Amino acid sequence: MIAPALTRRLARIPKKVWSAVALLLLAGTLPLWTGGEPPAGPRTAPARQDAAVAAAAGTVQGSGVRGLAFGTSGTVRQVRVRAGDVVRAGQVLARLDDTAAREDLAVARAELAAAIEARDRPARSGGSCAVAPAAYRVRSSPTPTPTPAPSGSPEPSGTPSRSPAATVTPVPREREAGGCAGATGSGTGANAAAQVVQAEVGVRRAERALAGTRIVAPASGTVLTVAGTAGTRTGGSSAFVTLGDLDEVQVEGLFSQSDVAALAVGQDAEITLTVRPGERFTGSVVHIAPDATRDGDLVRYGVRIAFDDPPEGLLPGMTASVTIATG
Image (cartoon, one colour):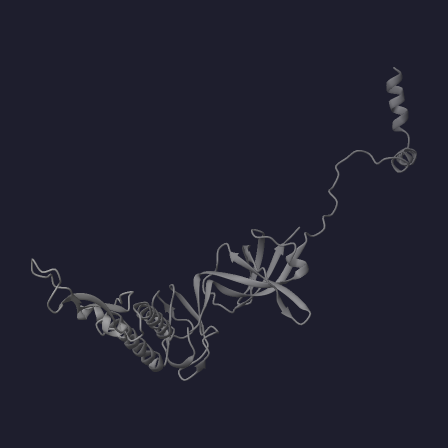
């Protein structure tokens, strides 16, 4: 009976009173939250700082780039390709004027033929130029010998007769050798053989010089650059044609020495291209140059990044930006 009566009394309490009571209750529990540890509840992870990255500008390049040069100096007579041409292995790309090289080869071959002729001449004549160690010839000459006396005579009689005896007579070495000394043109067979070897070396050298007047593609690819035209004088030491494989393009960026210390082959990279604004491409580091590129006090290292899925239409020399996560 008490509960119904209490319920009726509580119902007659104004709402303002209930509001005041609620405020008092909140005020009494507030010190429990602010004075100690916050109540248990869901926690949020602290804000994570951005991962460390290395960034650099770069250019698109073909893989397997080769700089091809002439093997000798001279004047360019013919250029058979231009930038952008696709060539096959073994194709002649450029030629020098090879007139002098052909003449040198003809002279070298003639010298070789003459050396072989001089070396083989005694063999063809059927003689031998071997000289006997002795410089003397044994010659027979008569010498007096006593004649036996007839039987019964106590004393030998008659004039002594002469019978052959051996004597030694000096003979010049040239005549002893049958007159073939000096037939090889160098005095000895050993010198003649050495002259043949020397002439053979001269022929090979002349053949290499003639081959160096041409630039031949070592593999199939695309011509990236050509350094001159017909009439250009070249020393043969610098690349005249640059050849590359555009089936697998890459981006090479120049990174500072502080950034390159944190890079490693296989790291993920992000690539943006000037010709494809708003698009981002993924790739990975495939090569880090061991030697630096210096520009005054600025030291940078070339780093190659290969596309995971290269876009079509890329050409060497297009600009790009590369970002590599190092954290």
